[in-house]
Image (cartoon, rainbow, N blue to C red):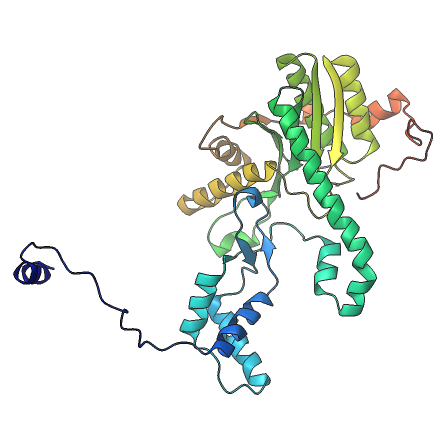
Length: 365
C-alpha cells in the first residue's frame, strides 16, 4: 500500500491513485451462450417455494435445505452427460450464475405447499389440462382473498374494526439442544397460540404444554375467548375481524361459533367476523411473530440447551426487538374451559344459514 502511494505521488504529483484498470482489457474469456442457457434452464427446473414467514418483505425463494450448490452442479453435469452434451460448465461458472442471476436460498419448507398448485405445476400436460379450470378458479380465489384482506387492513387503520390473525405455532419440544444426545430423549411438547392485531403492533401469546392441555377446539376456543374478553375491556363496543387457516380441529368448527356468540352476548363486543384464507395460501402477518420466536430459540440454543417450558416463555417475551413486546400468558389446567359443553348448553343449530340453505362449516375453502 505504501509503495502504491509513493508511486502515485511520483507519477501524478498529487498523490491520487489512478483508476483501477483490472478487467478493462476486454480480452477475458466469455461463456458459451448454449452452456449459459443450460445452467439457467437447470436452475429454473428446481422446485422452489416462497418464504412462509416473511413473504411480504422479500422476493427471495427457497429450495430444499438438504441441497447445496455443489450438489446441484453435480446433478447438472449428470444431465449434460446423459444428453450426450460434451461440454458442461464448471462449478465456478455454475455458482456464479446461481448467485448473481437468481435470488434463491436453501431452506426446509415451514409448511406443506398447496396441493392443487403443486399438482398443476408438477403434472403432465394432460394433467394440467384436466386441472386448468379448477386451478384458475383457485388462483382467482387466492387473489380475491388477499384483496379483501387489504380492504380490512385499511378499515383497521381507520379504526373501524380490530383486525387480528391467530394461529398455533409449530410444536416446541423440551428438552432440546445442539448435541445428538437430545435426539433420543423423551420430550414434552409445548404449544404457543398467537393472536396478532394487524396495524396495532400488538401480539398476545397463550402458552401451555401437553400435560396441561392438547391443541384442539377446547384449548383454541378458550384462548380466543380470553382474548375477546380482554379486548372488550380495552376497547368496549369494538367490531372484530379474524383471519386464520382452515384447520377444522382447531378453529373451523361449530365450537368456535359458540365462543363467538357467547362473546357477543356477554362482552362489550358489537360483532365478530371470521374469514378463512384459501387453503394452501394461508401466509399471514402472524407468521412474522413465529419467525422471530424461532430465531430467538435458535440463538438461545447456541448458548445452552432448553430443558423446561419456562425457558420458552422467556424467549418468546424477548423475541420481538422492535415495537411492543409480546404479551405472554401462561395457561394452567384450571384456565381451560369446556367449550364443547358450552355449545351443547347453548343449543345451537347451524345446519342452515340465514337464507335457509344447507350450511357446512367443515369444508375447505
